[in-house]
Image 1 (cartoon, rainbow, N blue to C red):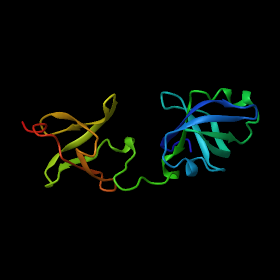
Image 2 (tube, rainbow, N blue to C red):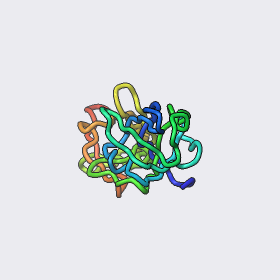
Image 3 (spheres, helix red, strand yellow):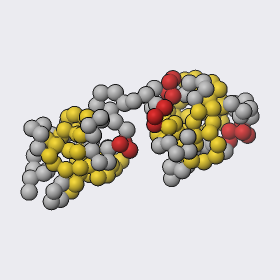
Length: 175
């Protein structure tokens, strides 16, 4: 598990009660599957580095906009206090694959970018989470450009073929 690419699935918040439960904010749209009993998860710091030993989910439940989770062998509030502010992550290969036009952000770098008529435009070289939303940087043959990662501009995602079909705003890619 130490060599697997991990995907952040939750931000750990604060202990809940006295018996080892901790509140978390899910970063997945399938929390019931991801936080199922028996699932092994790791904790990540803000730099994305694995911190501590893997944790095994004993039980979990929805709680308002958050989830409450209890880990095996963490029986007290003190035992989970050190998890506050960390992220929970799972190996990417243990999670359900993205559906339809979905893709993990870490996969986008290197995707080929083309227009609807098949014209090659470039390769995704970076992904930025900006205040205005997710933005990809595309390296073209002569220059790079930024494109908001929105349905209006990114029309099709071929995860298997590692391709994006785009409809850029007028004037963005003309030289």
